[in-house]
Length: 311
Image (cartoon, rainbow, N blue to C red; front, side, top):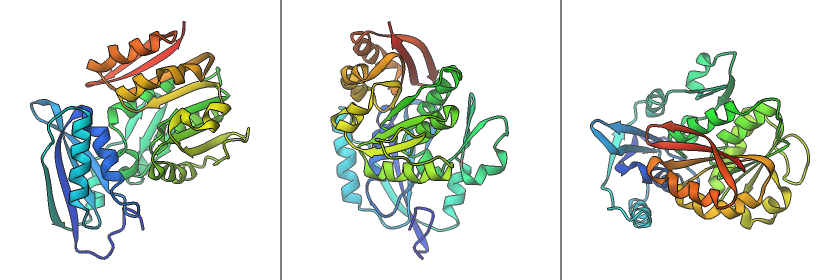
């Protein structure tokens, strides 16, 4: 059963959290991992006059474990050294809430790409590389700004410089791996530490008519791996990569700098995202120490996407 089914219940459970922007991706991952069988649908909204926080709303088909959620949110707040945000939960009468929430999720039009949900299928332009994603999955694993920034960065890379091997590190629902595979018809390794993410990515890859391949094959397509990044020998032995995409969080990006640089091929390109403007200097310094130089920056609201290359 997927998150678009209702399990016969007349109610849906809605959780609301006012969260600092920097903590949103971590909270979204917590809510997605609460139940392995039922995926929630997530949306986050601007709060008028508040540039620090956003309102995160999460809908569950079945009553979620509130204590488990509170523990996860508390742990995330401790990691970011922030106050624990208040959590409210309410049972709402089902009135096709999935369709209602989908209407709030607008397609992402970024460079060569058009990312949309099934409810917006008719809006997909023919002159774009279209990527079909389920709303609760495509937009629930990261903020719109970071996804759009990476899509813009991919769009600006030259089409005639076809990367033979690409790594999408922390692939989430597979949006960026799919974008890269569609743009160049090449070989992509998509990894994530979360098995729900890679399972979701598998479904989205198939939905977008891209071949699922084994990591060791040389065929064009996407191979997914559930692993802790470069701790996995397959990722380390498969490279070096012509292009690495890492849309995660600032601190992991900083710590991964040596491994990412070591696995980036000569003349390779690197796309980093998931960092706020206030975190850019910290992340950039880590990569400059590894011999990489900033080539381009994409700023969307508070979020930055960076394109780097060897000096």
